[in-house]
Amino acid sequence: MLSVRILEELSPHVRLATAVLPFAVAMLLRLAMGRSRLAGVLISLSTAWFALNVFVAPYSPAMQQDLMRLRAVLR
Image 1: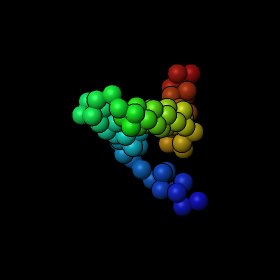
Image 2 (image 1 turned 90 degrees about the vertical axis):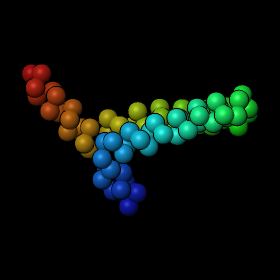
Image 3 (image 1 turned 180 degrees about the horizontal axis):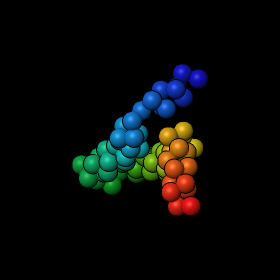
Image 4 (image 1 turned 120 degrees about the vertical axis):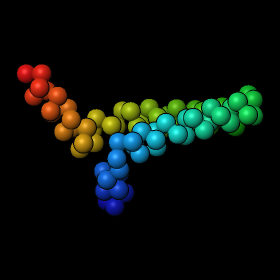
């Protein structure tokens, strides 16, 4: 489970960059190349990658701790 440990050690800024950067690169390629099939596939894949990162984020240990703290504050 080395890969899971590596992901847990990443800072929030790096996690955000790994989620957003592929989408930004795909959009820049779309602007540079126009409406090509490759650009469309890259945008589709990067959108799925971003959505996966957003849906999985609440299950990370750091996010769970933040949610617990927020619940304690709101009680």
